[in-house]
Image (cartoon, rainbow, N blue to C red; front, side, top):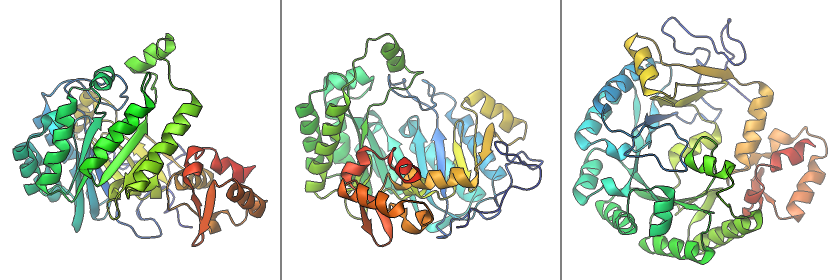
Length: 403
């Protein structure tokens, strides 16, 4: 089990050593044992307005994109040589579709100058339906974008308004059609369920409508309430009545059953894909493959070190202008922390947990038998694989093996 080299002398847990340029050190061999290439994530921190549930770092403005591109490319140059060639490039946010095709062309050209990419790199762009047109989507395709991820969240006008989304249900449906017609290798749709007051039948109807378009990928997220959001404040004041656990579990299982009946593979707790269309970039996070994150608020990982940039455009840009890597903080994972990560992530997806990882644990056989009897796991090809019912309790499964 290779966790990569330990940080160089001078690093302490929680604070990896840095070179004179400010770049975190101690990961000269940022590869998992499988040798899977790393992924590159670029955080776009701009939105037209903040949604009531969102706790990702973004600012409700669109000015400053040219300066942001300039800073991203400078940060990329500072990271040159740390990672080998990338085979995924993911633009997330925020609202990446606020970046016009010409600015995207400049960003992509600069990233290719500063970093190395494998010929089969897969590029993904998150998009808001309101920003799209057939012409824009065609330009995205011409720029080499392979996957488009549409932030629909719902096809219900009332729910869209409640969530603070700026697009209409009609625009959402239109964006799926246009994206499929544009010929992207994969078209993904993000949806949210478990919303206060949401009718379960209406949720299933929304799913049926989306599936009728036959997108390649669906992410179905249960609404979570983050403390520092408008929804978080409403919850503290007792003004947001969330569905109970039984209702949420029923919605989860019905969602999975319906999508699997339509040919989608439930390959991660919240993610479904037609065969061959799983998100290659997101799989890297669940496999603990090294990833480099560029931009304010972006996180990076090269075992056993994880680090992140400040969630502030101003502070990020200031550090860049001073010639410093915009590193805010980080941590060196202990062997125990890395082990727990493997379990927690493995029990959230169909790749599961390698049985050899747990071979020395006491009561392993009896725990496996108990969980299999309860239909929470299956054993396949030397792996402990969660069932859909197991997904429901994914966070507690690792603890069952450590009791």
